[in-house]
Image 1 (cartoon, rainbow, N blue to C red):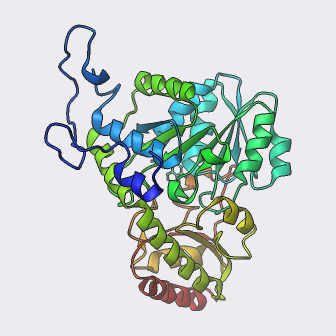
Image 2: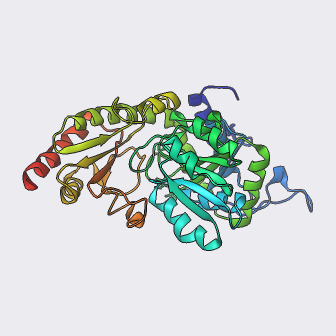
Length: 386
Ligand SMILES: Cc1ncc(COP(=O)(O)O)c(C=O)c1O
């Protein structure tokens, strides 16, 4: 289909069901399928690890939204990452990752994949010279996250694609923070897009999932082979929930961006904070690149608290509408302390995050209520830690 994003989100992969005309793809809660004859499964469906119609609908929709050839849905973002690594890398290969990648991605490389012979190193991929210097003849993948979790750094996808391809490496972009509505890495030359669909794609904090989307059909086949052979697939109910979330992705993202812009502007004027990290702020070091490759600047805002770690923790503990919790990308606003929560696994590593950092996932509530909710903990932090 050549329709616009909003139309694809509602229709791609989601033809009305042929028997009844149901406009919503059914949850095909079945493990197996009656076959026409030995060796003749109906429309290719034989066993639900290999393929399930509800998952197919989600996979086709994800592929359309990212402008890819093939989408694959997994049980979690990390399951998607693991499947990708084992499909395209061999022992001895090297992967270059950002020096502030999501903590769980770091853990997958450092504590799991490394034991199986995969080598990795971390570099500031928002700095093209540093990225170029970190490439080795063994580099098989350049793993980009942009914006990064939790420091919201911006990497120039098109420029890194040029560097990586010249060195014979594939480019993977974890597009979780932007979502396909704000950024489409395959159109910028990337080879693979990874999602934790748990976040903006699902959008309602009620389903864990992951996805891979690729532009090359042959690579898609290889990944599909591994998806089936390794088995970490999205179940039909999870696929259905994620697909329902995708239908409203465009309108939700617009509201997330509106609110995050208001919150970031408010925070930038608060003396308790030493820095506010939001790519939409004109003084953000990645602002120009973000403006070039993203439609808008997203719903995530981080900030550092001048009085240090205990003040940062107190702000997290005293917010109320901003619920204290891990994860992001849902309709409700969340606040967390990455150093002690989502990124605790990176402590002591080159990916350790600043201890005075607070991360916000700005939801779609009324912006003025969210700002009011932050004002009180910020005031308390000023007096309690002076
Ligand atoms: C940027 C990013 N990538 C990947 C993941 C892993 O996804 P999942 O939790 O769905 O396994 C997360 C989870 O927080 C994330 O934030």
